[in-house]
Amino acid sequence: MKLANPLSYPLAVLAGGITLVVGVRFVQISSRIVIPVASGIAIIGASFLKSREPESFNLENPELARELQVLRNSSVTLVNQVNSLRLEANKLLTDAFQMELLAAIQISCDRAQELPAKIDNLAKRLQSSNSLLSVNELQQQLSQVQQKIPSSSGMSKQHLTQLAKSLKRNIQLAQEGQDTRLAQVVNISTLIQDASGVLQQLQNKLHSFDLTDSEQLNQLQEISDELIGLGENIDLLVRK
Image 1 (tube, rainbow, N blue to C red):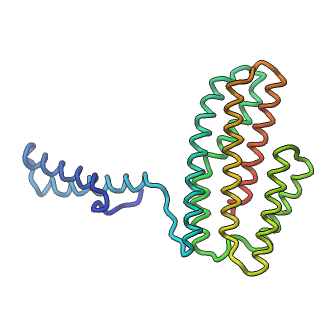
Image 2: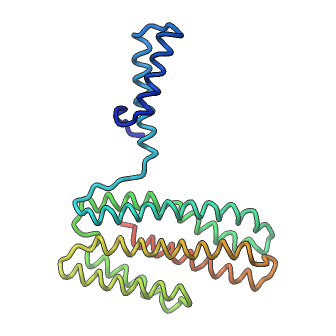
Image 3: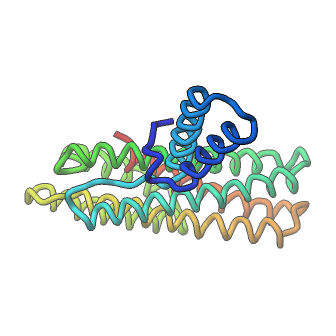
């Protein structure tokens, strides 16, 4: 936890002030002892409050900073969604024949839990670079996406096809010497929104489907697999 200036956090100053007044006037402790204690409480309180604030991104490009903040907020919202889904899945999927679906849902939840930290790391890299990725790195991403398209189907194939188109545009931008950071962040944001939609669909059907029906379980498994695929695509773009 990083130290913070108490003057920027009135509640922390108030806590320190109350400690000082109570210690000196009511408990009658020497001010030489109470003042350092009260100061320490104010500093610790300010540091705690600062740690609870959302991450802010100091970039020269204001639009990029805004998009990164939106991206991180979306990742936090997704984490809240998966926490709710995990609890419901653990409660509803208890039979042995439902364990494969439960395991797939837990994989998706575990992957989503890591997103906010990965977005923070991504932002740090952006602060020291004019371009998120080189042309070669973008081409590697595109190659990995294109390899997955033939074996995919349905919505997963649509997501991959759209991602491939976006990566091709980013490669063109990079080849022209333009900044690809904003385009790449928008790609990630789009994938997170897609994942949020699929997650909501999975959560709704988990409640409405007959979980003893093998056909409906298979449909839930397909939706869960789609969510895992989106998580893999997000990882592809956020990792170094």
